[in-house]
Image (cartoon, rainbow, N blue to C red; front, side, top):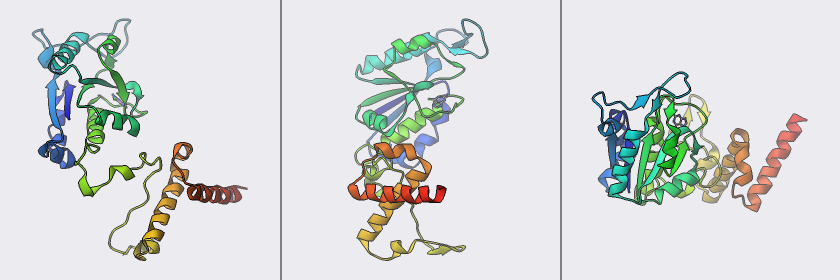
Length: 247
Ligand code: 6GU
């Protein structure tokens, strides 16, 4: 897979792309990154990428011409590239969307900046994505989030270090808790069942902890989670108990 990133701040990506899984994925040949400096597509002496908003108001707006010239240059290399604008006004990035993107051969991630991007850019991109309901100073951290989430799904990237199939959100539940040595740390003990060697009991406990956690922290996820009859029975008992406590 190829991931191109179009940005006013190319240096932002220098270190993150050299670390950990993103680095290994590039070394394995699973992905190649290219960071494109938007200013290389400006045509004036001052390399202007922004301008004042029509209608007035604070802040600056990213100009169309350099953005469209850069998109055209990438599309000329590969007409199948998926062009994505990162903006807090976009649709929400979900694990389902990440899976969709991981199945494409080539992404162009465009980092929005200033107060926003001239809205007519929508005619030149395939989609607009936000990574959550909060505001960043620019799309660069969001582009990294998208790249990281996509790359870890590529075949052979995670290997045995993790199984994407068991991810929270893949299963529709938050992940169960994890523990490693020591058995007791400052009075906090590891749950006994994990030391029992009883694999079925461990699996059951993990599943139930995931359900408990999801109910407590993200109850809205439960309606869409894939739950077995045993899961539903456990969940019913949990809600019964919490209703007794409330009443
Ligand atoms: Cl993609 N950009 C900015 N600036 N803020 C955000 C975002 C994107 N997603 C969430 N907040």
